[in-house]
Image 1 (cartoon, rainbow, N blue to C red):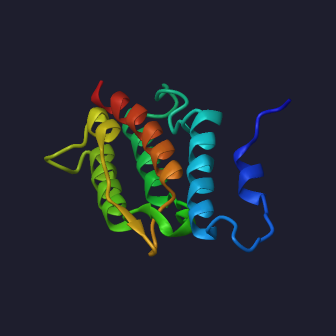
Image 2 (image 1 turned 120 degrees about the vertical axis):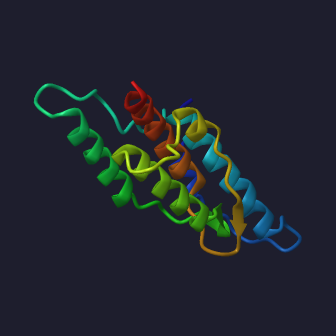
Length: 147
């Protein structure tokens, strides 16, 4: 028997039944399962697949990574929950400044890995799994920046 995938949970539908489970509670539980399945099913997306080479100067490579951070677009959180967008955007701005070497207070890979963000409910927020996965790749990039 094949394991259930996050997409199967996401697309599952159920008929409403009088006296059945509360729909909101089921939706939140299913969202938690989706997040757990996505975390288990895939390793974090790594931004930096290779270190800078002789063909691309080190600073050009980090500029390319900074531009990728500036262009990232996260999916909205599901069921009205997600990371606080303002906090994530401010953190990404600090990362861009670190990659470009334009800050006196660079972000370290350790800080990225240990970062905690507020979650929001019933308003716009970034999908937690997307942000966590993206930041895991950024931490790898920042480790190379520190070398």
